[in-house]
Length: 261
Image (cartoon, rainbow, N blue to C red; front, top):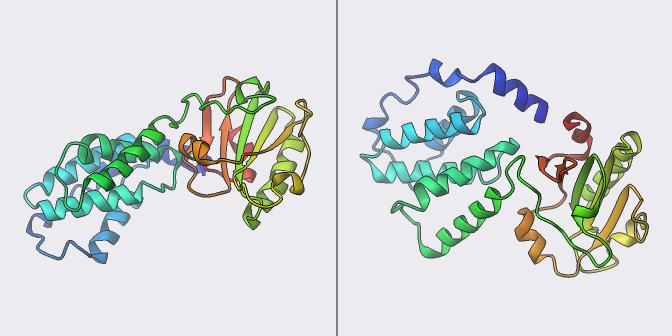
């Protein structure tokens, strides 16, 4: 994913300029805006296939489309809600910035259909979490009784959030074992987010008590704080940090880690 992103980033920076007429006729739109799968598919196709996969390119196109539909607030709001949900779980790791942009420039400033205090608070909380987790931002510290994230000395640190009852997590743990075996410049902090049952120690006790081990397994009894710090909506979840504990990759799979290095 990261390599593909780099290729697209440098090879398609002006692709949107080749499609100036895609939205011709939208001024005459009078279709339904509560549910419109055709319009939703058009939006997905346009932003997935016809706009360079860079946050700056995407946000420019959002602004143009919103301005073009400003005469029809129902249509404009349908577009904003659809794009907000689209970039809530983006394909590319940098696209978190688009969600933040939508909140900063539209949802926090405008009256939008179906936007109330409750869902605005949820959107704001999500945007503020993502704002702190953009690429090259310092990773939030994680503290345990015997050590903390900042004390890990390594060229690269992999944060692995998992659930010991998750089969996909089990496979990722095996892949992480393989990665760390081939890359001694990596250390891994694996954190079991499930406080119930036997926990991560039953899976593999390596690293507990030996702070020099390349893999440290820890389990937390109250995961809510970490969920907020690292936007953990599902497991497994991986962050890759550099020597200075800055985020250089996120939400990738274990087998993709060598591509980042």
